[in-house]
Amino acid sequence: MLGFSDNQLEEVHDYIQWLFPLQTRSGAQPGAPVLTVAETEAIRVDPRATETLMKATERMLRFYRDTGWWLTGYDHNHLRITRILHSLRLLVGPEAAQSFHKAILAMHDAAGAPVNARSLHYWAEAAGS
Image 1 (spheres, rainbow, N blue to C red):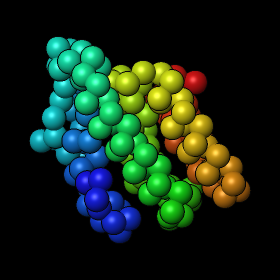
Image 2 (cartoon, rainbow, N blue to C red):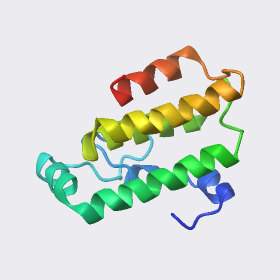
Image 3 (cartoon, rainbow, N blue to C red):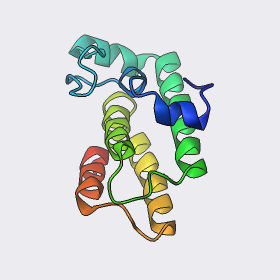
Image 4 (cartoon, rainbow, N blue to C red):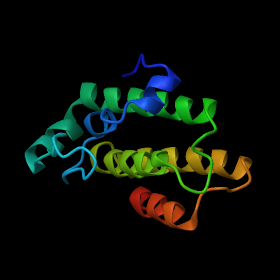
């Protein structure tokens, strides 16, 4: 996934649940992993796992910086952003989630604030802001 083109990141819909896992089942990809408490703890203390999460986060930030189609009222990428924020907060920590949130909001604001209020609310909640 880290080597996917921007078009691949947009067109493929099942990688985000694998890259940014959660402890809850995905409605969009019910076969994606669901983390146990033990797995969550193992990821948190494994430097390689958290480093990989941060590399994936940087790739997704580059994708969002380099594309503009998500900067609209409603887009499936809004759900992806919420998931990334939840996963970062759960597995890396609140600082990582808040840093990603801040970067996404800066892009949103620079584009004239096109994203709907509900998505913005979910993002803030997921980031712990």
